[in-house]
Length: 330
Ligand code: SAM
Ligand code: SF4
Image 1 (cartoon, rainbow, N blue to C red):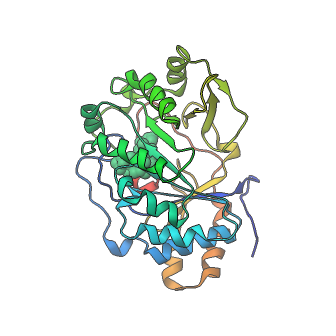
Image 2 (image 1 turned 120 degrees about the vertical axis):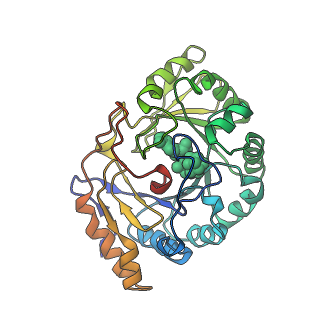
């Protein structure tokens, strides 16, 4: 059994994002449609299966695991899964992406269970607009969640903001100010063509990272940092703040040559690329060989040759990948 996962383009896979549920208490307009049908329980990986997937990847040299969804904090007993993954030897970075609404309840337990870092999504600081963008979300709870997470000791919390033209592009500087005042990092994300959303035309709302950067630089000149995530993020600093500004630009900055990551959907589909359908059914392997971690590891190793060289997203608004983001695990 190899100790590292290397694909056919010589890229080493060191990062896995695992979706722990497709469900969510929000219905963000860029992520879901208003009426969603969620998966029946039998199709969703159990907590034991999710823990086994994480262990298999870490034993194959993966150093970073991120739990996402859907909303990971609506999955029952999520803290017990975090506990099982947090103790895996060789895991260097263990993170979760959340909408933050359940952090007042969960932050302390997650920290005790071994989670190291949090990304919290926040697209608006205006309660009404926040409600419009998330359809169900309560801004006050998310702000409380951010503060509680900091109080219980999470460091370098990062906000994620998806910017849509005409919807929240006028809040870019307010979001930067909020991050500076609260001692947080913030990343601005370009909307990706995942799932067919009815709320808006993506071609009309697309706002490139370059446009967002220009707005920020009208107040704060940005200096690029040298750190690399080997993904679609690029980071910058302001002269007078610890807060870092990131741009996640799958459209306008191609990052595929250094891509180090794969994703596992909540159904156990190993996705080799966010922008392509190439995948392998790990649930079938686990259910036909219960408890056999070597069978699972063999299936993961065998999947490496089908990792595509690059994605082919465009900005013309066409849906190119029919999966919704909540299935993929952003
Ligand atoms: N529910 C959690 C949250 O919102 O942080 C985790 C899952 S969510 C799918 C992960 C990230 O994907 C969020 O920051 C969200 O804003 C982003 N996202 C969702 N749909 C997107 C899309 N179509 N394009 C770009 N980012 C998207
Ligand atoms: Fe839920 Fe996150 Fe998707 Fe919003 S972006 S609907 S919070 S999964």
